[in-house]
Amino acid sequence: MMHKSTTILTVSLLLLAILATGCKDPADPGKEVEQYEGLVINEIAAHDEITDGITWVEILNTTDKAISLEGIGLYITDAYFKNRSIWSGSGSLAAGARLIVTTEDESLVTGIASDAQFVLKLGTQDAAVDEFDRAATFAEPKACYKRGSYQRIPDGSSTWKNMTYHSRGGENVVFKLEDYKHTAIWTWSSHVPDLMENDAAQLKEFKRLGYDHILLNYVAFGEYNLKRTLPFLDKCDELGIAVHCWMQCFYNGGWINPIDDANNRYKEEIFADIREHAEMYLADFGVKGLHLDYIRFGGTASQHNPSTTVNAIGAVNRCCREIREIADSFDCGIVTSAALMPEKNSTAYYGQDPAKMGQYIHILMPMCYRYSYGWGDSGCKNIVNWFCDNSGGAQVWAGITTYTGNDSGGVKGMTATELRKDIDVFMDSKANGLVLFRCGLGTFPDVNDLD
Image (cartoon, rainbow, N blue to C red; front, side, top):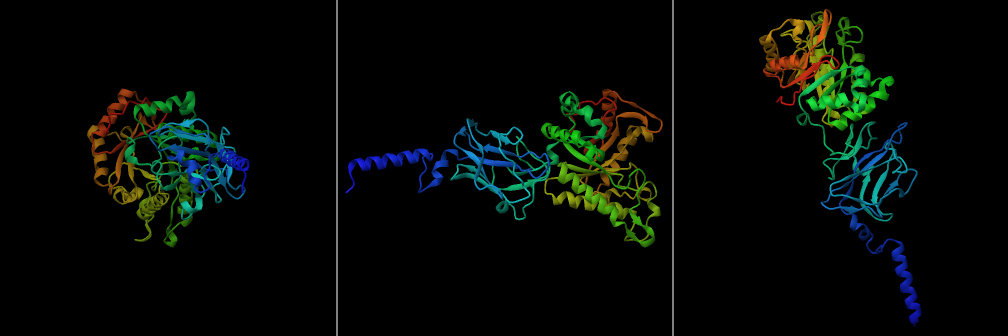
């Protein structure tokens, strides 16, 4: 028979053990995390395998009340660690609020490599309120894209996506063109420093005036420009400006003929190079769109038609189709667009058939540079309407200059009033949107009122 004093000592030791383990119930470990229900791991940018890569995790409170973070943490299991604590909570998280913990400020004590299997748990050492298991989450697990993240879409749901772009501190959504104004600016890499000067004052002004898209020239994505381009992309994401990579297809300091006329075949190496670059712009930079420039012949298309199966129009359409297939394969809402010469029925010169291109390209952007062509107001509207009527179902955004004159005869930047007058002329047509050429020349007017 147990003595009374022994019984009291046993009970006391049991109570101390329970207190020391955070009031765990050995029969139901889940009870210790009930107070944290509604907290989820909402986004993970795991980049420890990348040189100078930053890892961060977003925790979301999906409830309508504040939740204490005391006693909760993040625990990692990977090739190196087993259930290791890498963050310990404190304070509380307001209803609907997000908390970012990151290696950047060392609130996250170790990075996470997404090129290998890992499990990230939110909870206590012994129980999880939420968990991300990379292998179980994705049928074909892939590392995070360089500027992307694993995201729950929509917020707090059970569906995860591996996105090429991140939503740090904001709502997780797939990019949708209809959520942005149909206004864009052709921008050279040399414009980036000025746009970022004084805490991105000029970039913020573009957004305030109603310009929601930047077509950024491919030179900006070269290795020697990355130190200024990457912060620029982050700032555009923060401001809600969609950046598209402005690619050059059949031109590189001189015209590139994608057809081997003598052997009646397409030059596979040219198309492979364009595809490779397109994939890189998406996977490494998380741009929201691919904009195809020089997707044409330089006035010589009629000279490159060796057969009905291999010809100039076919080369242009093939490039459009392959770029669209690449964009769609990422499943991130990537938009395709193309710059067109603003001339009717000009396939013999350029190989551009807008009705066929529009079967693959989301937005056709005819370069309606009225001062180069000497068009009056009616001529401007007529040419845009022709492209709208022959777009193959694609949207048509009118491309116009922010200057008078032409590149060979000298140009003069327009005032905001002058440019707005031209914008009104073009937007009185059937056009779905507007593209300005170019950044850094002329004064841009407010276009928030455009439909």
